[in-house]
Image 1 (cartoon, each protein chain N blue to C red):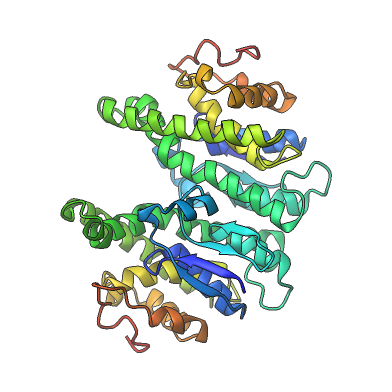
Image 2 (cartoon, rainbow over the protein chains, first blue to last red):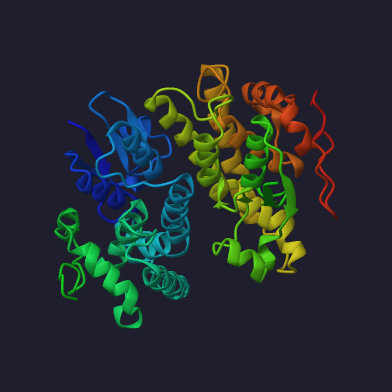
Length: 223
Length: 223
């Protein structure tokens, strides 16, 4: 069976879990803590980052887009998540890149560092300055999701796409920490409620990380 | 004609210039300084980043991978830069992501900031601590290129691919600054000399940024 090396608090891992679940591709999850830099894992992915998907044929796929493009190419047309014309596909990839890269740099990594990694790696106290900057960036990203959600049913248009999975995956980590003020972002909230209710999302809502309880409304579908 | 919004010191812009030149797709270059955050440009790409390619049909493509996948999908099989089996394509995408993301975060952005952006935006003096960290990361990346170049003709295997263009594009900015000690990386040097001699590379070697002369060996094919 395919094996997914992942960590529940890494947004990109969650994107791939959602992608596999939406496409109904079963996998064996394997917990990896990238900050430990295990030799075995570095041999698999020299970048040392999750997610890594090892296919039944032994192909080693590193990173969200690599995994997503591979599955789109090999798993057939049913339930495509990068769909449409070349221009529509470009828009899906642009938005996915937005969350996998821009959101990660501006919000995801700083919040993960301050709220979790500094504790587990004993690298000092959270910096309130870094947190404030990340929270301010978070509102800008949520404003953008508000705007995108107003334009159509889903972020990239008429159907659900990899862009929705990526945005929801990364936000779900932030929501686990309780950092999202949903009252300020009504359109983003409606969109997130819709994606959170999908069967593919259930697995994520059951995540509990040792020593760090999720926010009260994290698993609540009526938040 | 297609228009490429780019900046000569942004590695990702250079990747796309190489990609267009390798595929012999003519374009009109349009200089964009992302740090100025022009309203017009932000309308085109809300992420505010280069490269952005506007096609003859008016499709707006933002970012290296979005542009590369679109051109691979629309420009036919001749001169493919993401080629081979699904696994080979995954390897090309993994390596491209390595340079477009990991190299940028660990080397490209810090060196660009300290060597150039702080000056043009009057945001203080270069930090020697940041420079030292970036230079130390640079050697790790060059070691990895040494190792990859030893395995085969090109970084992802038997033929030139997007991974070579991406690595060479980002390194060429670092080389413009004169930050690469080629003597320490003989295999990377051989590989870089090979790609630097290609006709597609000529345009990059003619770049001169106002107020910042390139390193002495920058345009020299026998460096």
